[in-house]
Each structure stands twice: as C-alpha cells, then as structure tokens.
Image (cartoon, rainbow, N blue to C red):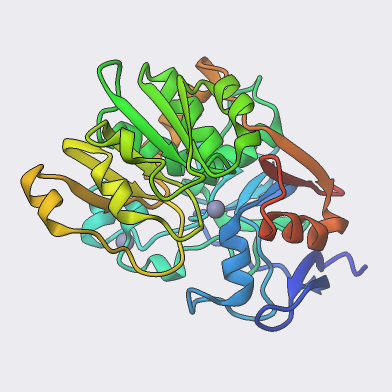
Length: 340
Ligand SMILES: [Zn+2]
Ligand SMILES: [Zn+2]
C-alpha cells in the first residue's frame, strides 16, 4: 500500500458488500485531529448507511462510527488533545458550531446534522480518520478500548434520554428489545437506580437481561403479552428495529409517561390518541447525545462498570460482522479490531 493512502472497507454502491479500498486521507483542518483506529464498533445505523436508507451516503461508502484510536496529528488550533492521546469518536465528527442548537450546546441537533457524520468522507472501518477534535473524547484510562467503542454510539444513545428525562430511583423503566442498544439501556437504567423491566420476544434473553440488571422480564410471545403492564412505566425505551405493537406500548405508560423511540423501527407509529390525551402521555425520539452528555456518559460508565457484551472480530471480517448484525445474531455488539 502506498504510504500516503489509507486502507478502509467500503461499499462501492448502495447495499453492496464491503471491499478493501485505498483512499487518500483528508487534509487536516485547524481544529481537526487525525486518529489511527484500533477498534470500531458495528452499529445497525452502518447497515442503513450502506443501503443509503437515510439518503445521505456517498460512495464509495466506508461505514463505522464507534471509533477508538490514538491521535497521530493535531491541527494548529487543537489545545486539549495531543499526539498519542487515546480518544473515542461517535457518529458525529463535526458540527456547524453556529446554528441555534450548536450555540445551545446541543450540537447533536445541529441544523446541518446530515453533514456532521464521521462517515464523511470516510468512516471508521479503516486505518485512520480525521474529525473535528471537539468531537473526539479523551477516554478514561482504565476503560478497555472495545468497551469505549460501543459506548460512543450505542452507549450515549441510551444514556442521553435517561438523563434528559431524569431517570432515577423512583422510576419504572421498560426497555423494549434486549439487543445492541437494549442491553446497555438496561445497565444504565439499573445503575441510575430505576426499576427496570426488559421486554423481548426472545425467551432465551431472560437470563442475560436479568444479569444486565433487569428486575423483571416480559416475554412478548403473544399480542396480549403486554396487557398486564398497562399504566406501568414512567419511561419506555423502544430500542428494537422491529415493527412495534404500538397500542400496547402506549398503554403500558403511566400517566405522564413517555415512550422514547431509539432505533429506526420499520413502518409507521400508530396508536389510539384517546389514551395519550387522557393520561397526558408523550412519544418522543432521541438522537445520540451532545458533547457534554458524551463526557458525562463516559465518566458514569467507568464509575458504574457499564459493560457492553461484545464479540471481537478482525476488520478483515467486516462483511461477516455486518451480516451477523443484520440477522440479529450478534450478542450483543460487534467490535472490529483494526490492524494498526
Ligand atoms: Zn450508531
Ligand atoms: Zn449547528
């Protein structure tokens, strides 16, 4: 390989298998850092990215946005990171820094969010990446890199809404889906002192859900399975990618309860508005987290030993990893090890 190029794994067109690609790395801007990647998690959002489901992918498309690595170069205006620092990088690699939301410190809601992804121009399934240093987070020293990788997207995505809606010891939290996001949501909610119910269509998930910190497990093997949960939850975190039984979900909320949609479930959300009105319920979405939330999440995860369950695979097996994620076979998250 030419010394001036970087090896990555790219989809050359929508929905295609990944293949090795040598690309010219981007130039370094004054606020940027260049990071040699040691680990990169595989997120379902990467699958959507490969298929261009969001309409924002450009090809060749190098996925990957749960990145850990070492800084190798820092721009002239980077003062808080230096060469050899170990950092984590999530889905957001930059922002406009001047829209209403960026000025409020909620950069994850940037009006230019479509152009803020670490995917652009090339994501983390590669040997190195360039991002704005303000979106590269110094990691707690004792935190293993593969754990940190998963926390950069899945971790902050479930932690942010728990904190935003003040999850605590007086709260009952339901987590729908015990998968990549759900198993971490259970751990964070448990660590925050909530009473946690895991809700899954897979009976084999019960034992592990309880080990992750669930106080109860509800198997949704029949359409009526959630009926006994009517008016139960302060917060219901919908982490599944599968189409939901939305009426049952809404009915399981307490008065003033809130359902938070975190995955990108298929189909439309439908529900009976009567229950929503009578009980003043809310349905909301939540997208990754701000820089402040990211830093807080890392410290909290370290303090409370939040431990995503991970399968490690070499980056050369990226296609196999994507396939396991697509088929729902990963237990519970896959992290690729890079060759650096
Ligand atoms: Zn992600
Ligand atoms: Zn902005």
